[in-house]
Length: 270
Image (cartoon, rainbow, N blue to C red; front, side, top):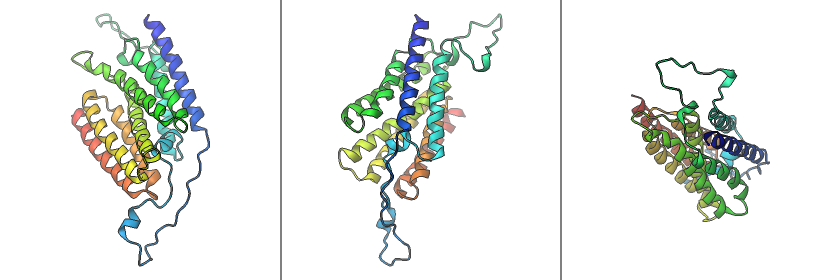
């Protein structure tokens, strides 16, 4: 039964990666340039300097269709982490190596310590494969599936934290959960902007703030498995780098969020 669950997880993981790759390769509409405020102008005030100076892509687009190398690398590593975690449930190890067990030690569990049937993760990955394609035409359905993705991936990633006295969390799955957290908060910010008419910089700052607060809470539960926090910090660095010239408020909030998450990571590792 456990093998059947692992095979189903592999299929869901392959669908998640294939869907994400197909969506990422879709063309991104170029931002519409606006008049840039010049510091030489006597009427260029602080409010104008802090406002977005160009129509940058929304947060969900920046994560799912990255334009800068840092975000593309984050997305690629998240895909590889999903596949590694899925194949490891069948006892697969990279380069054909296998862990050596001592006679006095108990049998090793599957890689990353997961022994469940992966139902939550399968549901989360399937939802994650579908919701980006619904974002333009059915934003409400995309939001529900996006929330289901975050709940499914996070639920399985947190499962190891309650398996015993010592956490047995998956490093690879925790990294994917960090990316999913960023994607879920980015989706929320995008819907605030496109469906409720919130200003782009306000929606983005709210999304970053929620991501930072959620990450601190979850990282404290995951303990020493800091790959979750690393993924979120990586995403915030990418957002800050991609918006430094267009949304100063977003860049500043991302830097603040990184600092808060870093404090939580130091706390759980010391």
